[in-house]
Length: 583
Image (cartoon, rainbow, N blue to C red; front, side):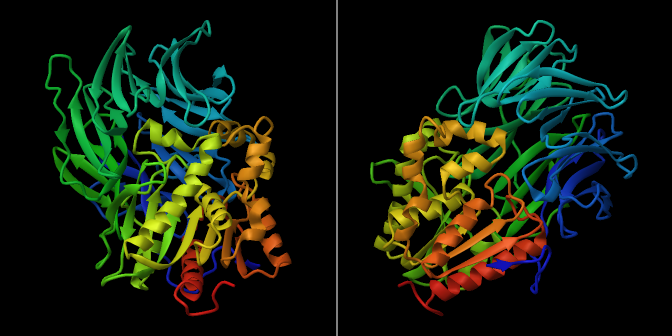
């Protein structure tokens, strides 16, 4: 095992990224999270100026920031030790009066939202408590309690709340009467907000095959945005305009503004030209004059941007690296006829190339043509990367997301084999490796042990090796939310045992690099140590990189740079024939 000191690296750290944009009420300043200092922290910058200053929130990494509609506070979501547990802290934009308001002790707090025009912060603790915090008085109100619950919004009068219930992939939004506790179904989905006056609800509905944006007034339902995958939306505080982002062409973004006045222009007005292929985190200034968002692309890390009076300009963003490879979208049938897609990053010249199949986490995530320093670095070394979207991925409709649930997991494992076979049969790949993180790490281990003769090398990044120990050691709210995707640890115990790679580890033939954060409480480190111990007992070629001070994600830039260096060396050795090969 190689234990890497936190922050250790002998090579240049990767380019900084910027995310979680949040505008001041008048749109003149932007707060955002950046890791330009080495660890994610809050920065504030005037729009139109290159001057930026860091807001001191302490040593722990920050995952998100929200500027209050009154302008007096920044709400900061902080991840102690880089782990999934989150705390919510308040700080003045000038860095004064820092104090914690949620996430005390073993509690976790997330899903924070300022209620427009009010000094009230809405959040959720432990996926069981919907909480309002009046930041003026310090009063704390529990709006609702229950399993797998999240607070989405509260109407201006404080009479009704929008709540989301349910596990992953099966969540429903309800309207709750705060006084009586009576609840009324709204739609299946993830996001919903009240209109400024509280007279209607805007919801991203997942009742159909593809998400649509609805306006719900009493029993009347109006579709405001549809066509393909409507991914996200945000409404101005005056309720007159919606900004909507679509997921199109296998993972690229389109953004448009839609007027919400009943007697006004309702046609979408595209926001163009977008500064990156993938756009997200839409946010309005409170006065509705400025739209903020993030954008990224191949060789172009997350940057924060604004759109004002039809003009798009960067607040803090790096240009795309010169010579970055732009991927192309591949599409082909799975073993059962289901269409699979993925993004191919290929070196110049004809194949076959040494190649790796990359598997994203989730599984309800999606591989998109965004920033990938690992992919670009591999292509520079002559290694092709196929970033796959196997069944279970988002972006392709509800049926595709649900196509790997519980006992259907075997189909996702077979999809990995199909991807490798396609790369070889089309002349793209010769020797092939497989790698992924989180659920993608699990799928990597599964592919290596179900299809041991197919791959020449593997890299497992914080993947699950045994569903039994995963359910036993992960955070309780993570376990409860995962049942709909993976199965129940008791009722489906036999299935989960059969699907756990640790029970087939003796079949593994490829050299394996195992990477994990020591503080990971999402996929606990026991998932890595059991694999490493089993491989060591067999004297199987492997390496273990353990990162102290990191959790489920490597949040420090120096840790990511070390991971990049070590992973490149591992793949060059075992995939490109620069070292010993598998036995």
